Length: 227
Image (tube, rainbow, N blue to C red; front, side, top):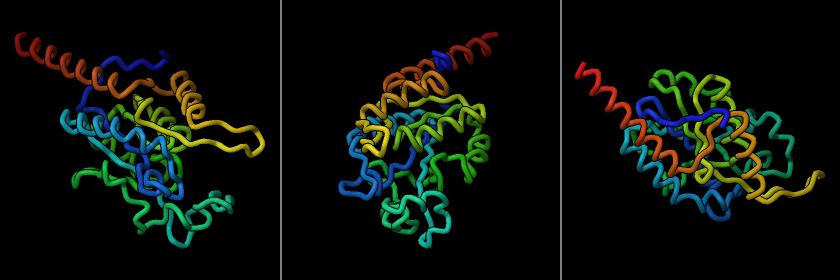
C-alpha cells in the first residue's frame, strides 16, 4: 500500500459526499447511476458513524447555470443532458441531494462546475479552516468526480481515503475504444487510485481505523496527564 492510513483522527478528517444528487441517484434521472442508489445503505451507515464520531461531513453538488455560460467543454457533448440543459441545472430539484442522505442543517454543500470539488470552489479554504488534513471520498461517479476530487486532494497534500463500497460508477458504451461495465470501470479506478493517490478501503475498514485512531488518542492523552 503506497499511501497507508492506519488510524484516523476524527477531529482532522472530513467525509466528502460527492454529487449524490437527484439527477444522479433518482430512478429515471438524466444521469442515473443505479450503482449509486444500490450503495445508499452503506453510505447511510457511514454518514451516521461520522456524525456520531465528530467527523465533519461536506457535500458537493455539480451544477450549471440555466443559460449554460459555465458549461465550458461540457457543451461540446451535444447529445448529453448537460449541453441540452436537462440535467444538473442550478435551481431545479435535480441538483438537490437525494433525500435519503440529505445534509443536516449545519453541513456544508459545495457547489461545483467541474469534476473536482476543488476546482473553482472554496473547498481548499474550508478544509484548513476546519483543521482538516485527511479526506474520505464517497459518492458518484468513481472515475470522474470522485477520482478528480481524490487526485486534487492528494495534490494539495491531504491524506486521502477512498471508500470502495461507498462510491459507484456507470456502464460505458463503446465510443471507439470498446465498452466497459460499471463494475469494470469502478474496479479499474480503484486499482489506479490505490497505487497513485489514496488508501482504498471499505466503509467498515474506515470505521475500524477511526475507532483505532480514537483509542490511540485516548492513550496518548492519558500518558500526557499521568506524566
